[in-house]
Image 1 (cartoon, rainbow, N blue to C red):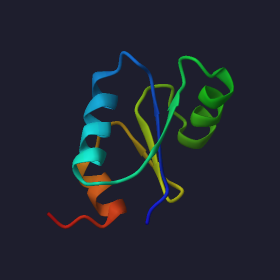
Image 2: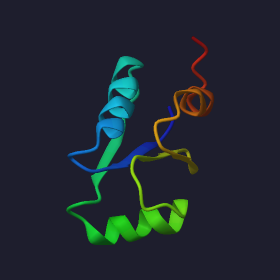
Image 3: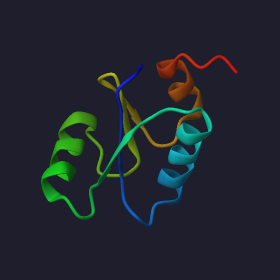
Length: 79
């Protein structure tokens, strides 16, 4: 099983879409609220080079934004 972490904020609609996609595909994930955790926000920026959310990490692969095709590929979801 893939290790999935999503860096998000409570007001981000694309973060919600990414989490819905993960739930629909029965993918377990950890969520980090970067609005509440400044250290995690810095970590996200260092990993991705981005300040925007969502940033999704799948087995050390960084996906910026809700990119369904990139997520499917990283998670090996064929449908």
